[in-house]
Structure formats: structure tokens, C-alpha cells
Length: 292
Image (cartoon, rainbow, N blue to C red; front, side, top):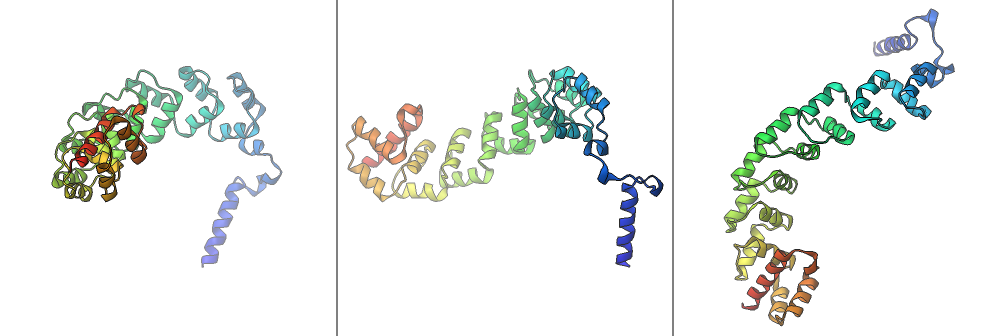
């Protein structure tokens, strides 16, 4: 019975490929790809009339298979000028048409490039999504903003979580960074439980990036060092807090030259790279250790 089903399926496929008629059977083996897919001289001429005069055989086949014709070219190129063959084909494959162009225009971005438009289409950026972001207080000034926020699943629920973590002033870039680096309510709650209670979104992000957790905060406390300054915690993490650090700092002459050499050697930090805030944190924790 299984063999019979297989035979019937094979026969049906054969009939379909043959145009459903044995009397008019087409010999595909003797046809060129152009003949099979209907790439005619008139089709090639029509594309040339629209400015696509140097398409190779693969591009001509792809255009025909995906339905790129004179009408579609006019529909797209009236907005963007003359797209190259790859861009035009990508637009067609992903369903970028006049209707979608109008939807994106209605989103109010000052400038949208073909690459932006294609990325928005691929990632499903919609008017409703952009409106929801703006209703949450985010500017979303560019397509790139909307695309990045959509890719990383910045939703109303996540933004509400960010606000509940105490980061009311976080803008869309802050929220995006918090999402990427997995700053979650549970992470913030664990920091609070460890005694680190005052920090903003950027400080939370820095602590998360440097893996500041309850265990590390407890270790800092065990050394009788302050635990309530996020910058200090990050500095101690970078300096690799352990007994060897304590001993090295206690033996250190705290003149500015030796101090900066020590910081650089221990952390690969260069003060002339522009992070004065971090340099000050290094100096604070070293001074604190020196007084133990």
C-alpha cells in the first residue's frame, strides 16, 4: 500500500512537471535555464530600458524568478533613484513595495536609506512598534534606533521593569545597553540585598559588565573596604582584589607617578584615554587600602 502511494505521488509530480499533458510534454533536459524561466529578449530589453543593462545570467534569472519587472522598478526607483541589482532584488524578495514605503514614511524619520528600509522590513519594524516606543518617552529619531530596539526586544514590559528598578531617567540607549548586558530586576535586587543600594543605570551597567555580584561585594566587605560606591567596586574588580593587591598597595609610595604606574600595570588603564572618573575611583580605593 505504501509503495502504491509513493507511485501515485511520483506520477502526480511527473504530470505536474510535464504541464499535465503527455501530448504536450516538454523536454526540460533540452531547455536552457532562460527558456525554463521565461527570460526572453523582450524581458532583457525591458530591464535595459530601466537602466539595468549589465546584468549577468544569474542576475537575470533571479530577477525573473522573483518577479522584478518594469513596474516594480518604477515603483521603487521613483523613491530611491537607481538601486543596484542586489538591492533591488533584496527589496523584491523581502516584500518592500510602495505600500511599505508609505508606511515607513508615515513613521516620521528624517532620512531612510535603502539599507534602513530593508532592515526594517526584515526585522518587522512597524508603525505600532515605533509609536509604542515614542509613547514610552523615547525619541526614536532614526530607523537605526527602531531597528536596534526591535532586534533586542525592547518592549513596554521591559521598559516598565527598567523603571521599577529605579532607572526613571534611562533613555533608549540606556535601556538598550541594560537589555544587551542582562541587567535584570533580580540582578538589581541582589545588589540591594548585598548593601549596594544607590546607583543609576550607567553604574548598574558597569557593575554588570565587570561581574560585580553579591559574593564580590561580600569579599570587599571582608577586607573592611566600603561597599556602597559602584565606581569603587568596579575599580577593585579591575585591580583584582585579593591579598596580593592589599600587600602591593600597602608597600606603594602614593606619589602621583608611582600611583599611575601601579594602576596601569595592574589594570592596563591609561589615564590619557579619557576616563577621569575611573582614574579617580582607582585612586580612592588605593588610598583606602593604604590606610587599612
